[in-house]
Image 1: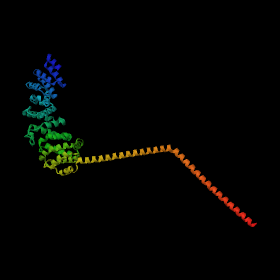
Image 2 (image 1 turned 180 degrees about the vertical axis):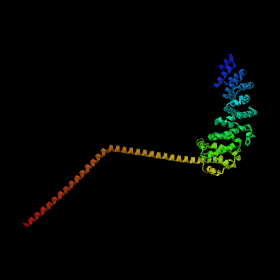
Image 3 (image 1 turned 90 degrees about the vertical axis):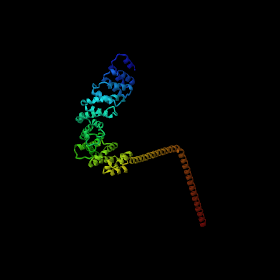
Image 4 (image 1 turned 120 degrees about the horizontal axis):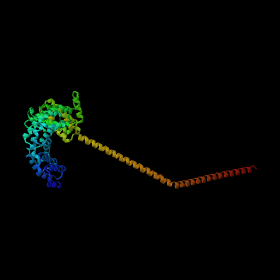
Length: 445
């Protein structure tokens, strides 16, 4: 705010003010006051300075009444002095802020007159920008003239464009409704440019990533199934998805490498099927079987990873009298999807099995821990018993020694008694024998 106040008070030129405004807007601050200042000094600015300052606002996504009036001021100026980069930058910025719609038509008109001197990439970018612009901000006459000039300037340079630019060009150039699907589409300006793009795609499609080729199929579909370009592309899709090695030449090797490293996902194959299905009625029988045979084989290979919604969409296509429904092997595809191409069921079963095994392992580990605890407790209890026994062992030994001494005493007394009884018996026998001898002697006498 302080900077703007000083600019208003000082005698700075309009060009200097525009430079300061671009710096402030580039920082993303004070957009509303800056737009008011631009409107105040807009009439004093050259067209190039005013256009670049307006672009700075649009790049920040700003939309406001003051900016719209500044664009109206620019539309009343001669724009032929604007450079090609300035014209392209303004056209691109118009897709980010609706405030620029009042001037973008005139900017594109001037750009069309200079298109022959533009680089091919800038021409493609302008075509993409005009294709994004909806409504009547760019007249039908301007769009038609743009296609005519692009046809003249771009066709000789198509071989120099990278694959990404070819994709953008194919999606940006679309024929009028009356020309779509016609075998003589090349008679129209858009048709001629699209046909030239298609021929370039066929020439290099062995080197294109499958994701790029899918977008190119979408962009070239208006040529119709009767066109040789679409027939070649559909046949190529069948060879790629089937993994057909063909003659084993360099092209086949590249196809195999591309299939392994850049294969389409299930959703992308579904999109491809939806793109080529409307073309099937105009394709020859061999191309239909080859193309949809490759798509069906790819679906069968992906059956284990398809979701329920994807399987439902595929089955619906296979049950119709077009597209996949024309493929001779559709019954095999149907069986694969209905049987258990159900990857969800197998996954749930494997998850259940894994959860069961995990629970078993946990229970085993828990029981093992319990056994270890029991073993530890039993060993500790045995140790404590041994300790207590060791403590109690002196009294027990004393008792044992006493009992032993008593038993010894008893055995000794018993032996004494036995010996005394034996002595008595011997004495008695001796006395008896002596008495008998005395009696015998007395008788003798």
